[in-house]
Image 1 (cartoon, rainbow, N blue to C red):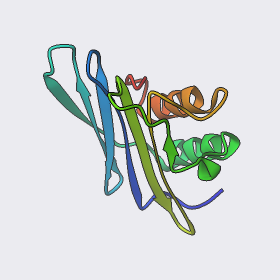
Image 2: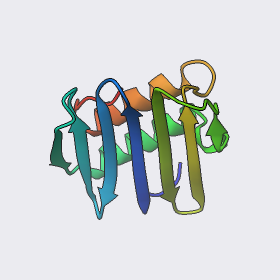
Image 3: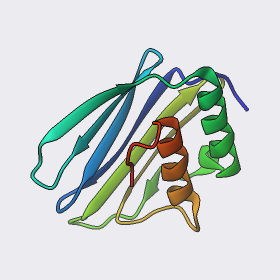
Length: 123
């Protein structure tokens, strides 16, 4: 496991449904959710250090650091997502358009992020 992140941003963007973005600002996460009407709601979340360690441990188990840079390439995607994460000695930039890493890796990432966010939605 590596140290706490120095950069983190993740998003799921949909044309026809809820969208979410999480951005690290210091040790605080800015969580923004857009409802079906396109209205954003932003909440600040400050996870304790142990929650960060648990999150990063979960990402290790999901092999996040080995995900490829791009999944899918549809011309008019319905669901787009990206993850940018930097921690001491490691960095990953990965994204997709209507395609995801195999198996339960992406749902596992979303579940780990929901725990880090204190049960706020990210799906």
